[in-house]
Length: 297
Image (cartoon, rainbow, N blue to C red; front, side, top):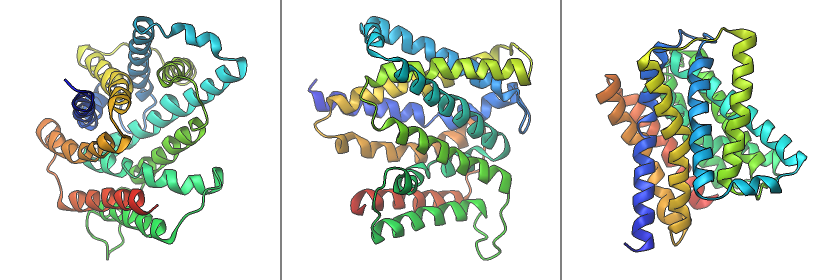
């Protein structure tokens, strides 16, 4: 099989896995928590631990563990900060959003993060923004507005303000994570392993201080394992492999836009949610704005 076909295959598998994650979050959360319950930390801890182990095994078999020797004390400190942002803070906020909102709402609003990244890059990376980019961002945010009001845009009434704010907050944290990672030239898989290792430590300490250690039943463990492997670990490695094999990033990057639409299908089938028309329309606006930004930004 030629490289480009392999790239498409890896990318397609990654997109399929990512399209199941919203449903995995929603199905797993009842085993751990109620709304804004800190026991969500347990789901996050087990998932993060699984991801750390999976990434360690990958580094071991790819003979990349020796790359850790190239990290200075400052690099390890940076990895600790990154681990605090993600997986710790980002997924804690995101999972709380999922516990409040429907899966379709939380997933769709979370897809706003590329536009949040553009906005934060202006003050943090001193990047200039074009008028066309401002229009593209406005298009995406209008999509969030449609979803948050469930189509009642004239009434200007948000159906669940707390959940929407949490979902939007997760996009800010995720964007900050990528902005602070942009200048790090170390191997991406090694960086990811360290992020999850430190993140797992932060999550475990939070459980000790703010909750109590609990072991969920089989369903909860299976959910955490699935999330740890296919949201946080293996899928990211598949995507990296696709990018590396592809002739250009654009050849496979556009496949990622299929993920939120496939997610709606999975949410309907697995979670049993009725997919609302405002969700679909809002998602079209969000993804449309992202595509416009890529074309004209």
